[in-house]
Every structure is written in C-alpha cells, then in structure tokens.
Image (cartoon, rainbow over all chains, first blue to last red; front, side, top):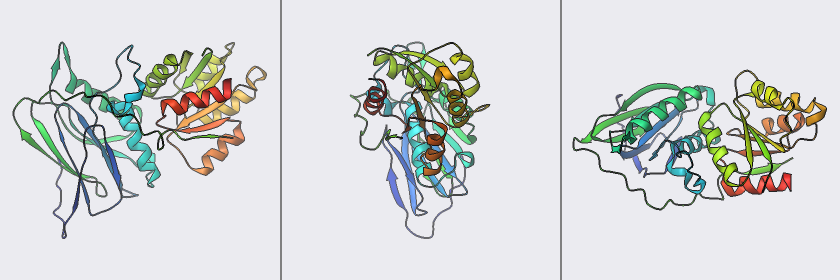
Length: 186
Length: 121
C-alpha cells in the first residue's frame, strides 16, 4: 500500500468495472475499483506521467477454451489493452512500473481463482519485464482501490472482511471491433 | 481454412491466445518464443504465414524478418507483425525489412482472421 496525497482541489473519480480498462494523463483523475478475486493492475510511466488501471476476472482461457470473442474478461488480454493504451498516450514500455491488487481467495472446486489470478499477474509482468513495485493480493476480503495515474500512487483498503462473492460471469460483452487490432498492409 | 502458421512472441500468454484463436480458425500452429528460436524452427519447415512480435529478447522482430528474407525458402513467406508498438517509424522499419503487414495488439479475432485470409487466400 502506498500513500495517496490529498489533492488541493476536487478530483474527478472514474470507476472501473469488471472487464474495463482506463488510462489517463490527467493529474486531476482518480481511478477507482472494487475487487474480490479479480485483479487490477495499476501501470504507470513516471517519466511520461501516464497511468492506467484494468480489472480482470480470470487469468487466461483454460485449455480447450477458444471463446476468443470474450477475451476482455481475461488478464492476458486486459494487460495488452492497458499497455497498448498507455503507449498510445505517450508511455514508454521500458519505463512502465506496476502495482497489483485483488486476487482474494475464491475456491472453484480445487482451484483458487484469486490465487491463480495473482500468479498470472506476477508472471505476466515478469515476462514483459515490467517492474512490480507494489502489491496487495490474496486474503479473503474485498478491496477498494484508488489510483492516481499520473503519480503512480495507490491506496488499497479492505472493503469488507467477509469472504468474497463469486464474480458474475455473465455473457461477455463483445470486444469493440472498431478500436482493437487495427491492421495495416504494406 | 487450412494451413500452418508460425507465431513468434516472448509472452507465453500471448502465444496461448494466438494459438487458441488460430486453432479455432482451422490452422495448425507452430510456436517460437523469440527470433532465434523462430529461425531454428523455420529450418526445413514451410509455414504458410509467420506472425511475429517486435520486442523480444535475443533477436527481435525486425532482425527476424531480415534473417527470414535472406533465406530463399522463405523469401516470399507472408509476415505479419503483431505488436503493441504503433509508431510510424517502427512500421516503416518493418516494411523495409520485408514485413507484409502490421497489426496492433491486442488483436481482434475477426480482424486477425480477415488479415490472414487476405494474405493466404
């Protein structure tokens, strides 16, 4: 957990829902979300003063799961969306730093979804050579996150000590075709 | 659709996503985790398409494309770059090296399928 300085003026609070990603270079913005077994990665570039936050439900598609039209629920996709959006706003990959939150314990048979999500997030950052500078994961309670994207500072509070509820895995919202995976032929 | 596609990306997660998408489309998938491994696996292999990341250890995507184009067997192999990078400078560098096209990550399944159809069929 890191200190979050109180601002001189009013801040604009933007709530990030499950499956969403938001990036900002506005010093007046606070990105907030509430997490159970889900993970939020807070990425920031301290040089470009750009930051962003995602909120993903599951780490990766399981073996044999080929529902690639609901990719945004998966961390592997949400992380790419976040990195890409930050680079489009001026961030440099080699400057990126990360904090991760969430991943509270939620058992689904023999699998702990929260722990799997946290392991994925750490592995992804390691593979992508993005420095993990802070984390608050695991446990049993839900968390409320507030992230100042331009400062890279976050506040993580336990919202409730009650065991986290199973996230609703509703029918996935289709990926917005217009904004992703632009193709250019040479 | 049929054919063999080699994917090159140092992110295991991205390789897995690509494999899921391409298998779903009916393609056989060969994988490599960087440019060096891709060149090793291309030795004697004849995929129909190569999809490569740019930022990778040992040998990056630009270097891989240049090396592939030096080989008679793969001189005409279509190569799509799949990367989070989107600067004109890097696109131009890939184009000069011999890339066929450029896709910005994360890929949209329908756009990826359309791009593959365009270069293969």
